[in-house]
Image 1 (cartoon, rainbow, N blue to C red):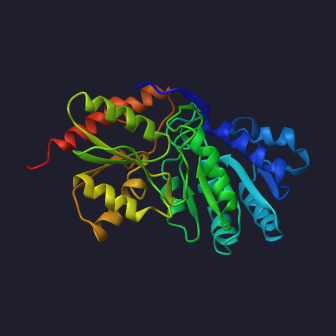
Image 2: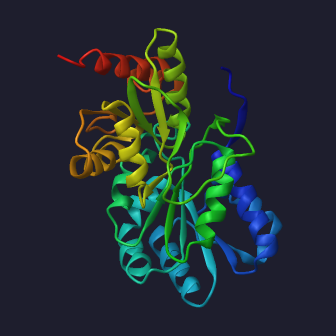
Image 3: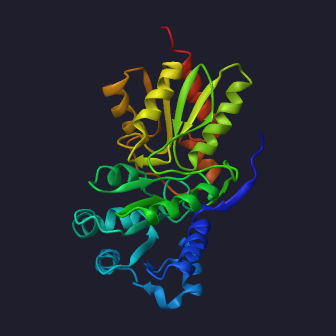
Length: 316
C-alpha cells in the first residue's frame, strides 16, 4: 500500500496554530529565533501583534510564557526540541509544570531526522524526560492529519503539554474519518501473530514494516500510541492480549520512551514477552535521512527485520 506524502508536521503546526489564533485572541506564540525552521513564522505573518521573538534565550522564553499563561493567555512556545527540553528544563519544571499552567511546548526537529543540523541539535530522549514530569501531557503525532487534531486537543487541555514535531514531510497515515483523542491509542492494522506498538512519525515506517511482513505470512497487530502521557493502559493491555507477544518500535531511545512506558503497563497489568526496538543508549550524528535510518535500524526494512527476529523466538 502506497501512502500519499503529506506536509511536514512543523508546517501543520504553524498552519493550525494560526487558524486557532484567528478565532481565539488568547493564543500567542513565542519563538527562539527559529521561526522559519519551526514554521512559527506562519503565525508571525498572520498575527504579528501576538508573536514574540525572544531570541536565543530559551529559559527566559519559557518563563515569559509562564507569565502570559498566568494572566489568561494560551502560549505556544516554539523552538527545537533539544533546546526546549534540555536547555530550558528547569523553567518548564518549576514555572510551568508545578503550577499546571497551560503552556504548550512545540518541540520541533525532534528525533533522528533533523536535516543535518548537527549532532548537538539532535534529541532522542525528549519523550522520556517530559513523560517523567508531573502534570505534563506528552503527544507524538504520526502525520499532518493527526498533528492538526492533536494541537486543537492540547489547546483545550487546561494544563501544560509537550508535542513532538518532526522536520521532514511525513506520509499521510490517517484519513478524514480519524479522530485523535488525548490518552487513546488506535489500531492501525489488526493481526494475530505479534502486537507492535509505535509512536510519532515512526508509526508510518512500522506500518510499512507490517506490510513487508504480511507478504511473508507474519500478521502484525499494529497499534499507534500518539499520547505517551496519559498513556492508554486499557488499549495497551487489550492489544497485548490479542497476540500475547509484543514489540515496541520508536525513533527515540528505548530507555524511558514508548518501550519503557509499554513495559511498565504490561509488567503490572498483563505480563507478556516484550522486545523494545529503537535507539539504544547513544548520541546520534548528522547525515542524510535514509542513511541514518539504515544505520540505526529504523528504516521500514530494518524495523521489519527486528520484528521478524523476535517473532522467530516465540516458543523457544
